[in-house]
Length: 330
Image 1: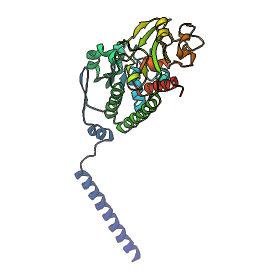
Image 2 (image 1 turned 90 degrees about the vertical axis):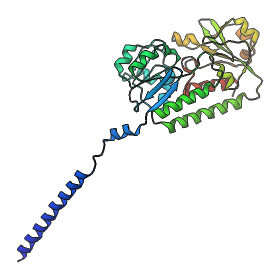
Image 3 (image 1 turned 180 degrees about the vertical axis):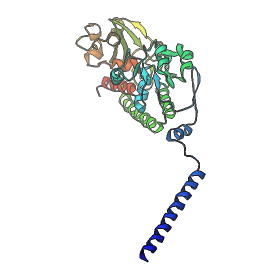
Image 4 (image 1 turned 60 degrees about the horizontal axis):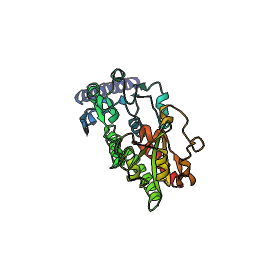
């Protein structure tokens, strides 16, 4: 009798299980198929149209393989935590050295002359360029969507920092890194407030010169480094118009006669020829030694890689600010 009851209970449980599984199968058949995770991510990305000086670029999907043909662009990506698939490696600043040494990051040639065949072979889904590569825009655009960084290397006197922050925000949107971009912009704003507090109401006047194999060029308020006077609040020692990418050639006598209170020296030779940067001991120019800047220990041999190779990215601007603050003895 007990065995019979047990048999009936077993049969009932088996039938219930079968019916339950059948019901689950029916519900599964009725339920819509769930998209894969990558399909969900793709559908979540709304196309973005980026307007820049060379046209409009439509980003149809989240980029995963980025070719950055300018060191400023590499720094933007580094700040946002976005991988770099390939970049130019002829002049890589010390703060981005890991990209030069990383064999997984493709070498795409030279800053002023990228290797277009290497770019094509990389199969990027986004290319980032600056005015230094603008002449290749059409060909690069045929390879992948290409965004031009509208920074003015010839005259940065007006809103240079704002242009940098706008580009950072654009890339933040493209890569879904808006929060990080906002944080980096806020950090840069804090550095700007720091330097303006230092330069505010200070009487010292400064001269920015570039050293190139013993020769000098000056950069004033309407030049490549105009933003140092405009955004950082530095007072110019010379009002001479010096608009241009390469500055105005000057003599040692000019520096002596201008007699700046602060002298910022960019050693281009150290960058281009990979030599040690000049310093007060190795700069044996007797006329410079007669300036107030030299006598008062306010000759600043700046971070040449930040000033010359980049100067239009978050890290480079912060390093430049540090150099300017040093010039005031702070």
